[in-house]
Amino acid sequence: MDGLSSNPFSTRFTAPGQVDWIGPSDFFDVLCKRWQASNYRAAILGAHGSGKSTLLEHFVPMVAEVVWRRDALGCCTVGGDEVGREGVGCEVEQAIQTTVGERQGFGSSATQCAYWLQLRKSEPQSMVVPWGKLSSASLLVLDGYEQLNFWRRAIVLWRTKKIKTGLLVTSHRRTRLPTLCELSVSVVTARAVIERLTAKFDEGVQIKDTVLQQRLEQRGGNLRDVLMDLYDEVEQRRLGRKRGW
Amino acid sequence: MSLQAGLEPGESLEFEYAVQCVAPELVDSLEVSVMWYTEGKGGEDIGVHLFQRIGREDLTELALDQPRRLSCDLPASPLSFEGRLLKIRWCVRLRLFLRDGRELSADKPFYLGHLTTDL
Image 1: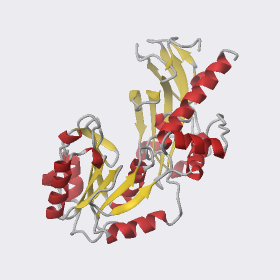
Image 2: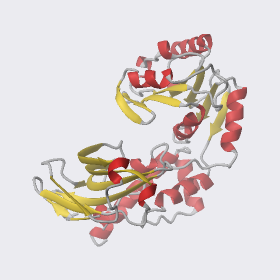
Image 3: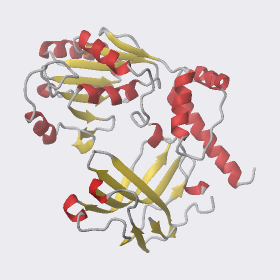
Image 4: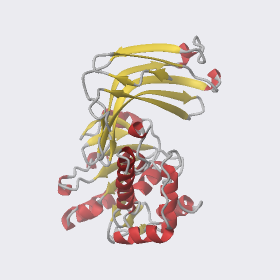
């Protein structure tokens, strides 16, 4: 029934973390080694829609035992469970109290806490970093680092270095941090994502590689925008079917 | 799961569910919810109208493959809506949490009201 069938390109299916990471099988091993080599201070670079937030979704839980997170709307979660808005809740305190030992390297068995902040596009300078919670056994993750002005970035670099806390950021352009990886979307990746999204639905999407390449170029390599275009096409097609076009 | 497909606000929703092809000893807990969620090009929102969780202790007394009947009165809003940019969907969701950490989920959609049924 068209009326109640989902559009495979809806945000609920395409949001970062909803699709498995697509890449070489040893990708995360290599990434973890680079992460350690960078002394736990690095940047993930890439254009809009190139997979930076998606990579964070997969990578951060690998290198931190407890993940406290505040999204762009101020909603806070610990380990994926909503715990409130804005403040660092007591749940994370409890989680951290159960941890033992100092940092022995992310990705090891040592328990770590990641404080993950998604910067608001409208007011990035208002970001409140829970400095009091950070220690050498924690990690600060900033998604959208390039939105901070020069001084805010300098403060983040200086304070995290002083506390000896880990720092992982995503940015559209180069930063003063070592680059963990630089992402871009290839036709092969885009096709794999589309196939995974449509696998569970009747909605077949026939798109040639040349057309997909063209669309990626038109959208500046932004896969998110390409998927949004496909969302519109699916809706248009369904509307046409209902109206007998 | 079986239930009525189209319902009106205030009407009683009656449905029954059964779990088949999953060995009862593999199941840690089970959740049934009557809920709505949004779908489209923006962020997702959800609301839970009815929620029932059956833990491991209670599961042992249940025969999972036998149909269990539940009912609830439906609210006045939000009504189901099938727009191009946004859809509001109602469904009964059954989630099984297995002892090995896996999670199985099944949705049975229904339509509340008649805002966009002509579409």
